[in-house]
Length: 294
Image (cartoon, rainbow, N blue to C red; front, side, top):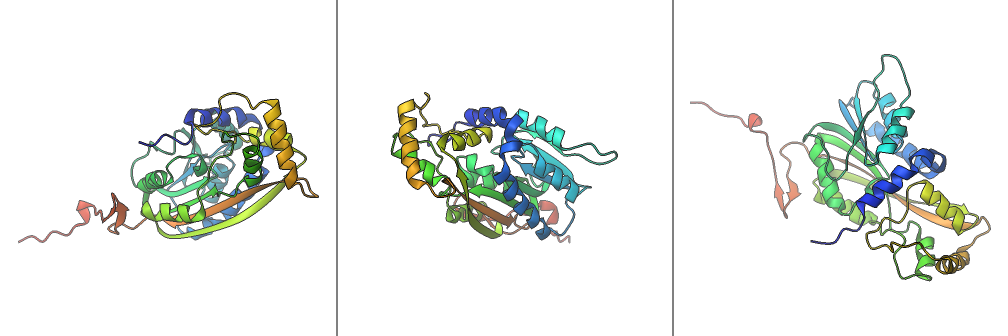
């Protein structure tokens, strides 16, 4: 069994600490969220149950509830303080449904199979070790023909920061992210149909390295790698990284690249074969098998 890539407890701690100030720092996250929400037009029918996986402070959950006011929206997050923020951000409207908070791990959803019509996930799946396994779990809870819509980060994300720390320190500081081809392969392996993927580079600029690091902490995007150094980065190493990062400086400041991958795919219809255990497997409800009586 492979050692885990991420320390799940550290991921939970980081996002729990970031909950109160996350909204003020999450300009990039809101921009990507808005793009995903625009893609909801691909789901033309009215869903009964919608899952916002990794909902954070719940802005998307509230938007999903407004888009489908009759649907039951589940706002799921690993960090309980994020769900408290989501409850506040849901607002209060008389006689209107509100997203229901659910504290759980996306790797093991406490939901019945084929119980969800739409899964929406904005910048959550980059924090999981086994992307094919998580996508298989999302397919498990989706009804046949259900929609999966998510965003994640690609391998060019924070390439400048990765390079700067690599010149100052042998320990890993930036997570390795799946490439768009790996995301597509994982979707197909999990049994999804007709995937549509896109990638885009968004470059932000910062005055210096401490400014970037403060924003990452405010977002909960700290180093959660299981192989990370468990002591503080010393002043000398940090200064060396800052010096190396300065080689990337542009007129607007220090660049930080975010490679954004978005994906849309559909759960297979009942009876369509999916990949499982290295072979194609088709599942059909026994009630749908015609029986000829003599």
